[in-house]
Length: 381
Ligand SMILES: C[S@@+](CC[C@H](N)C(=O)[O-])C[C@H]1O[C@@H](n2cnc3c(N)ncnc32)[C@H](O)[C@@H]1O
Image (cartoon, rainbow, N blue to C red; front, top):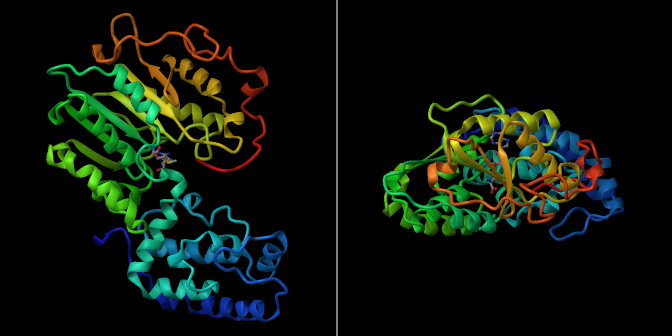
């Protein structure tokens, strides 16, 4: 495992008092709880959760682990990414841990191990800030979007293509995009591809194709990317830690931007933030550029922010909207520019749901358009 310079060793002495207190509580829990202690595979019934909360309140455990995160990574931790963020109890947290972290159901033992085992700590930190709900198994997240691109993006000799994967996470989608371009005749020298994401640990993963907490996925990642590296694509792809909500600008603008798994779900769903993000993305497009947006949100997010709401926001910033694979295509077109300077072939101009001209809100019942419609579940991407 390559050494990640973003992980610092914490000082165990600073945790001793907390560890002692938690250990004592755990001993009482183990000796007196009428319910089973958390164990791998245990189904957490409400009574088990209640007992866990009684002896080892998750708020305290969360604070302890957050303190560890603050000591270990040099940038401000994005706590909302971590599995502790909205976990209802220690028991729930424990059973969801990967097997290599389930050595003991005593949180003090886990913390002690993390404090004294650098490799385990590294894997734990990556497990925490790169949750599998963000990138799933990595590749193949939006095949229909890629199909759409394949059908519409035509190679042009001499044309330079500037591409951004906004909110690229661990970068598999970015490399997959490079793969598609290469398979469709684009030479690496024609393409400038950037991946932006909020989390610096993700940037490190994308740059190194290293996933310390998921070795199998790492092997798949490296094998998949190797041919691209051999064709020189490594020099054409760069990853940056950037906050899309913080007014990023670009001198040249991007011809193609992908923004998957970010807009309209657990991360960005408040109307003001959504508007800001859409405006930002539109501002990053070159004239004639195309923005592709898709997500795998479930658990009620689609009710709260249906595609029509997103479509309407996109139209508000002056882009034309179409269906594109799993999501939408937003086109910065005007009379004088052809999308992607002619690299994008003619686009369908009707919604494939309601057949309305362009993508439109026609096909959605009015009540789904209210931005404050209730969410019937909180499962993220
Ligand atoms: C669900 S993941 C999607 C990753 C990848 N695009 C995909 O579809 O597989 C969402 C990503 O958005 C990133 N993110 C969240 N807020 C962001 C922001 N304000 N600016 C840039 N990236 C952000 C997270 O770090 C995370 O990697």
